[in-house]
Amino acid sequence: MFTQDASPTDIKESRMRAILKQILNHKRITRNHLCSILHLSLSSVAKYVKALIDSGFVRETDQGVATGGRKSIYLELNPAVGTNITIVLNKTYLDGALIDVLGREVARYSMKLFQGIPKDDLLEKLYACIDELMNKSREDGRKIFGIGIALGGYIDPENGISHEYLFSRGWYDVPLSRMITERYQRPCFLVNDANAIALTEKYYGMGIGVSNFLTVMLGEGIGMGIFVNGEIYMGSTYYSGEFGHTQTAEDGQLCYCGHTGCLETVSSKQYIMRYAREGLSKGVHSDVLKYSGSDLEQLELRQLIDAANNGDRFTRNLFNQIGGVLGAKLSDVANIFNPELIILRGEVIDGNRVLFEAIEREVKNLTLRPIAQALKVLYSEKFEDSRFKGIGSYILLNYFL
Image (cartoon, rainbow, N blue to C red; front, side, top):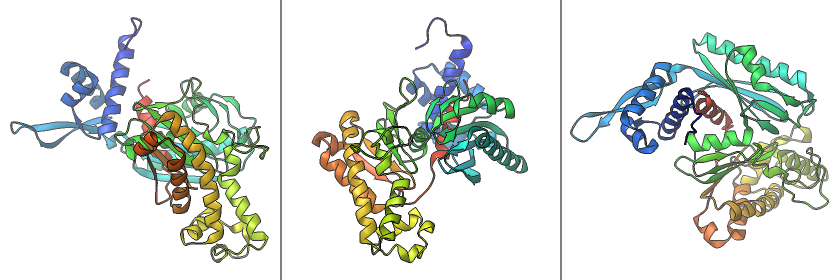
């Protein structure tokens, strides 16, 4: 609903975004279908569709035969419009990718970071990533029409400000979108990293066609993306979904957020690796040593997951313990939100059958029966960083702002 103060430009851009969203949802859609969904006249839809076609974001395609024998003209996203630069900032690494409007990865860039990296050093690494992907796009003859950055902490996506990023020293109230836009002359958008996963699932993954679902990112941190009535929920200050900082362990370990006993301190990748190394250093028998040898510093998370999936008792016990904690907390969330679906993603859970089964079992056991009966819990059987697609969709949906 528009206010009396809404300008024609505001209305046009809002409706163009709404049309793009429906095309992203349906992949291919007719003008008549858009009219019925958006409650707009055919002439109005035709006007905004023409603007999207003229801008290169949408193209027409023949797909099938309509009633009466005429071919239906469908609308779909146009990959020829170019690519987005999508970047994910993590505690110990920075990843970037070129993503086209269909969510396909064109190129990838990665570099290691360290927790507590000074702000200016992190910015230089961020610029180096963008420069590399810009050069790659030029070599391939592709146009860059947007830049998106996913990161944790307190961000204001509307104004493009990263207020606080706890993995970097001296990072406060950084106007990151403005800085990137001025440097590269491309619009830049910020999105929470857990929300990026939720957007990926909504438009490209297991959340297609689902209106109410949660995604849980299990990796170096633990975050949650929330879709309510088909819309992503970010909270009044854009700080929703901080699942990893819910209180879990009384008199627990100090978390980097400044509190003690947070869920992340007993279930994140860092905790898993520390627990495994401590146990193995004390002589605990485990088949995981076949993967890593005697150098425990070279031990990798995927080796622990492989060992657990192959029946190793030590790693199975570890993941069952963590699954019990995560499942109990998720049952509380399920009882509050009553979602249709909970999707578990991230390097800790992807391909980790033992952890998934422990979480699912606990959620089903502790959630109220009417909610549990209608609830599905899913995970990915292979590891894939899915945030790039979600960042690309966020750029697309917010481009006409």
